[in-house]
Image (cartoon, rainbow, N blue to C red; front, side, top):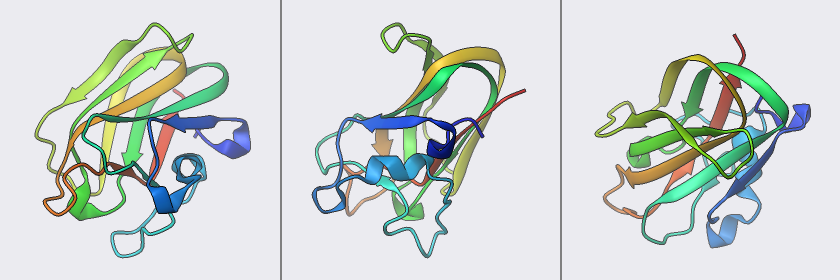
Length: 145
């Protein structure tokens, strides 16, 4: 997994839940939350309207052929979301787009070999009825060929 803080990756996001400051870094710490144990093991956006995004910056451009996004709370998993790649953090190319996604645990995408330095996940809608504006991710994996 190239998207690990221990390998020099960094994570940024549009927002964090007020009482979980610093949680963006949890999406690249190598800890995958379980459906019953996700508190403190996830990135959680602020409770403001969608879209929300989280971005992983690798220390250098690298080839990626698979993306895995592990979700946190199964009741609030992403339903509509986009994955984008960039070499400079300014110019983005769509690498996947999901609408009506139903798997509450994780998303996996096999890609043609893609060279990127930045990966951005934009969540446009989540499954939660109780917290409809929340976005949560446990872990993002960017795997080389």
